[in-house]
Length: 116
Image 1: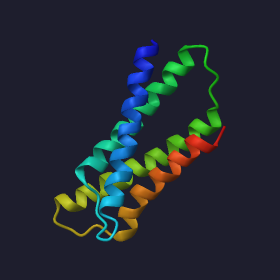
Image 2: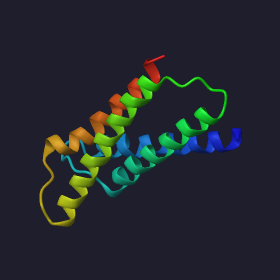
Image 3: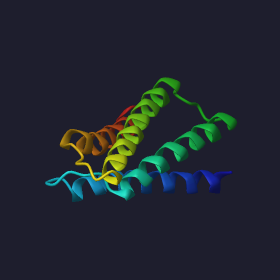
C-alpha cells in the first residue's frame, strides 16, 4: 500500500508540474497546452485516489482542506477543458482563462504546503 501511495504522490506532483510549467512557459502569450489539460486530470484523479487511500488507512484526513483543494482542482480542470475546447474550435483563449489554469494550480499547491 505504501508503494502505491508513493506512485500516486509522484504522479500528483508531475501533474502539478505540467500545469504550472506550461503556464510559466507560455506566460507572455497565454494559452493552455495539451499537457496542462492532462496535468489537471492527473491532479484530480490522483488527488481523489490519495484521499481514498488515506481514508482506508489510519491516516488523519483534514476534510475541510481536502474540500478546498477539490474545489480548486475542479476549477483548474474545468478552465483547462474550456480552453482546450476553444483551441480545438480555432478560437482564442482569453488571458484570464489561461492564467486561471496556472494561477489556481499554484494556489492549490500553496494550500497543500502551507495548510497544516
